[in-house]
Length: 321
Ligand SMILES: NC(=O)c1ccc[n+]([C@@H]2O[C@H](COP(=O)([O-])OP(=O)(O)OC[C@H]3O[C@@H](n4cnc5c(N)ncnc54)[C@H](OP(=O)(O)O)[C@@H]3O)[C@@H](O)[C@H]2O)c1
Image (tube, rainbow, N blue to C red):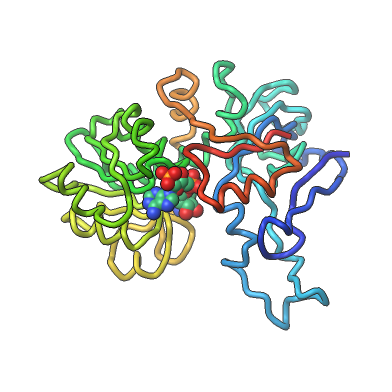
């Protein structure tokens, strides 16, 4: 038997449960991976928060829960291949692999399409590898959509989040000048990655203008606040080069570039898929750091989500089964 973490209702992390299921077998085109680390992302708690879901008379059961639509959790993982379908080539039992994209990775074992596997560099720790892919591909997509290149001045809101820490490093590597917002306590971390830190909160626009008197050529909204949007609109002339990954009606009204899976948003499937290999190569070579804030045992996934909701210190949260 194997453990899997899943919500039992919509709500707070209190609804998460650990249940026992049979160890899965692969169907055609699939492998099974013993999970060594699974990245935690804000989308995980948003999925069962009820934010994306309507419970109505037609769908809810006696307990008031639309159990058929409760989400699985875990969109990225790393681990060791334990089973390979007969038709899969180039993957062996015992291979250490990065697993992305995937679903239901908050588990001891996960079923993975062979196309979602990339060899894990031995130089990359399990926890770091487990937190690389979703944040990394999102950062790469955001920078691509913003057209960030040498000579740009890019303003990154939420530079200390999982996505922001990688976006800073990729932007600096591309030759851009980077300003990044974070709590004052994280200034040294951002400076160490090559960004000019700017504290968010009241007076942000003044501090950005002081740090970049000529304004910025592009901005990444990785936080979703009005403050981030208003500051970006004030310092970036071209609205197409203000890129948000956070959704919300104001982003659509202002005509900026929106990335994601909702109406009018760019999912960037091709860009994200293409970014995977380069991210793994850079992280394996040590030119891209994955900063892990904390790891949690699988059966403490709810605590990891509580930490995420509370606004954890910089870096990734990762589950270790
Ligand atoms: N569209 C997509 O494809 C996509 C993909 C990934 C993520 N997302 C979304 O993007 C957002 C960021 O994701 P993430 O994984 O980077 O989140 P995260 O790691 O959970 O971000 C946490 C950080 O947010 C910072 N923060 C809190 N309030 C802030 C503010 N007012 N201004 C600036 N920073 C603030 C905190 O930094 P301090 O400690 O410095 O306060 C904290 O370290 C989430 O909403 C997520 O759902 C979207």
